[in-house]
Image (cartoon, rainbow, N blue to C red; front, side, top):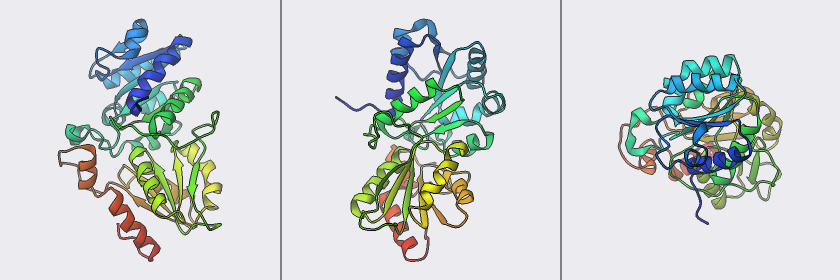
Length: 312
């Protein structure tokens, strides 16, 4: 069976969930297309609002107040930035049961350009408090996060990429995506360095690194909101003295920045997308390369850290 991207897995999983839960509603900001599976199977609960992101969040909040479970999808840049005030008030402050599914996270939009890239969205959402932030990796984890979001009464921000399709790291059948996945760390009780991956590209990079050097340890995080990060600290503290967080995001407001506050006795480094604006047009991979985010730069940074200097 062909692997689905996170974006397509979301549509498929939500459509299936809605067959047994009549309270689920799907709202799109002109991204779904005329063949959206939810719209085809549940047309009375599917709304395409066009480019009206603030109105979409406010509409979702009203539906949540009425007992529905609204999922609202748009570009990550427009969800986290254009609709920021509505998310802050309806989801953060009032805690309405709204699920924002933000595709095109990071620079996965590639050729769409800087206006459609999102390297600041996690920082914005973290600042609002009380919103679950999930960055699933691969089809299986994305589907599981959608199920968890649908079953929860908490507001959610789910960050997806565009068209990349990956196999998720293995979890037990009934295991929550809030649990850490740890791999590597062979031949030693405590690793010299723990890589922490957030998001799809980062997780794929860390998987490659561990294959090259399995004395390093890799911890994959799916949920990165403040409430989810705090329970990880004891487990992480036992893995290594130094951490390198790999995340398709800016350093400011990243998961690394908050983990540094939670791990004051440890060194926390960050492999991120730098300070440049992604003005270079190209594929997802080409834009990441332009920003210095990738396998070879990550390898070099690991060498620098283990040699006593972080040269990122």
